[in-house]
Image 1 (spheres, each protein chain N blue to C red):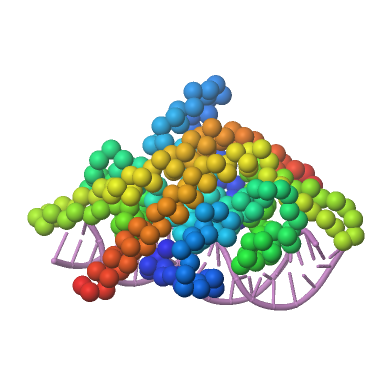
Image 2 (image 1 turned 180 degrees about the vertical axis):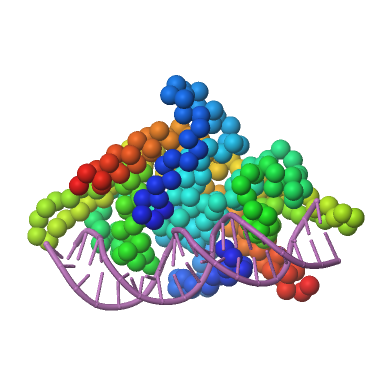
Length: 143
Length: 143
DNA sequence: CAGCATCCTATCGGATACTG
DNA sequence: CAGTATCCGATAGGATGCTG
């Protein structure tokens, strides 16, 4: 996910120009599209940025303050990644000092629903997961 | 996510003993529970394992063949992680050669729905994302 | 204010070799 | 068969310093 990753090409194959079939209906044969999105969703800051932008656009340092713990470097990189994927828009107002507003695109807004569903699952099952972890670690420690 | 990560404590703050409020209803103030699950979902192999186990239990090498591209090391580590989180169960049959069956737990099965929702989003919007990436890279290249 | 650039560490993940 | 152990390159991500 670093410098634009540019995997781009790889599984060239099946690009015989008229591929409207979209085989990927079934998630097995995991089209790397799914993995890419899962990777973006799973990275440490992206979804926190998306959720922070839920209620409106924010400037760079507003986001920085909102997100707590994020370094300026990672905020920049995360925003670039989200912008590259078309999830976030970046509006520069050339003034002194400069003003840059970040906002969700329509695509970015549409991503919130499934991510929130996952968040709800996490909240609903956090205790079960914690309990499982403690049990696992306890057994591993005893044996 | 390596050796049991044990972040456990960290954002102690706001633990004023009588916190039955579960502020976490709202995903902002992202309880690290959500981040942990997002991290697990976002790692390279976990969800592929979960989806492979959707239709029934599988043995170690069956999973290995099913998943294509996963190294034996990463399959082991991924399975341990999933087992630790209570998403996958591990049943050893002490025979020669040994037989180990992996299956989803109820918790693991319940995770599939939100993950599939995300997968559907990825499939539905893959072209929009790809287009955004190409546009972004093109502009970056020109300037 | 909104960033690049640089350095540095920890972790991720692949390849390979060995074992009960 | 189902691992464990080791080595290694590639990223992720934090800290710090500089700039228009």
